[in-house]
Length: 126
Image 1 (tube, rainbow, N blue to C red):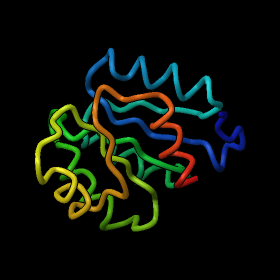
Image 2 (image 1 turned 30 degrees about the vertical axis):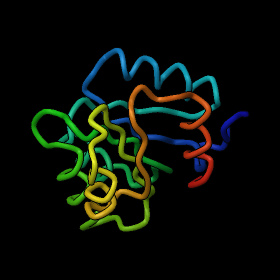
Image 3 (image 1 turned 90 degrees about the vertical axis):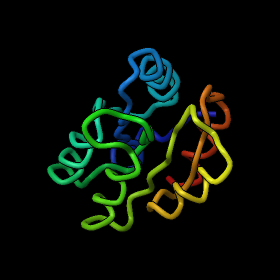
Image 4 (image 1 turned 90 degrees about the horizontal axis):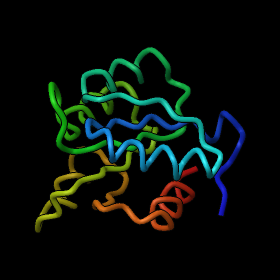
């Protein structure tokens, strides 16, 4: 399975503060043909989307410094209602899925992230 190599269909913002998690996502997504930009906190992710509205999708970690993924997503939704935002979290507790959807996420994936599941979810939105 490969991702789109069309920059308009494959430009992904990865908001992830854990270096090892980002390196894994980078390896999987770049091998699938996606272009990535990395932010390490929710505040930077919001600013990146404001400055560059041409992203195809956002992978947003829930627990990050400065501005968590839930609040960053709520803020992004005030100026961009259409971009797909996928929550990623290591903290899969009862009610977390609903909380993520209520915050404006389109979908939700738990860590450790399985390669095929991640690519399937991304493909669903691109």
